[in-house]
Image: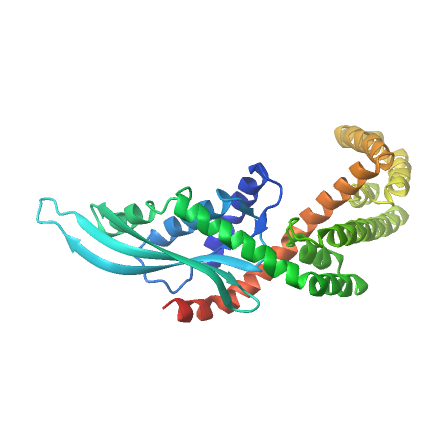
Length: 323
């Protein structure tokens, strides 16, 4: 189940990136392992939950909230025709759950009917009738948005304290991941954004310091290719970028002609990045944007890992509640 869940994460991020509005709520589509459905139906249900989220302005992956369905069979029969057709009447309930509190914050139920040449195809036909764009589902998802904003608004001081505590332990990736889940529509978002920029800078500088230290060790050993590999990890938005680029010049000067030729394209790219970073440092807003984008990308893995732990732990609870 977890493999199937994380298989749709990439699609979730891609859909979120293309959505018109910028304030995307962090909600994770999730189908319980224990739902008793015919073979192949869970994948269709997962995709429908994914569409329900992304087409109504939800995106990202935080593990804070899950969008999860339950399927109740109201009626099941076959026709007297040859060949026989399967008919199923289902009630699909959709829940938005606050994972940490194990609380259902919103729910709705939709009756659907499906017809198919097999039971599985009948189920899939019925599930595909759960349209993300109907007024009822749009209204439901909009009401969820309001409740999620209220949820975060009440927890902003706690989340800021948590992020700061993580940063104090130099767990910058995890700290940024906590703040990334907070939507921009929260009234206190200005303080969140300010801390995000601060932590993003600390994160990029920490990565740069580690990379340069490794590069120095490799240079002493005469491993210039390895030193270069370490230095290219330094983000141009880091305060350490200028120092890292100076080290890159030193490494390039010591590399053999063949090594430099092999890395010609990479060195050209680094030179372009150097010019872009200089322009960014001359434009504070551009610099902050670069730092936030880079730190958020680094935090994605932390959010994914946290979500996997949370979902595996809450799976039995969800099934018990929904059944």
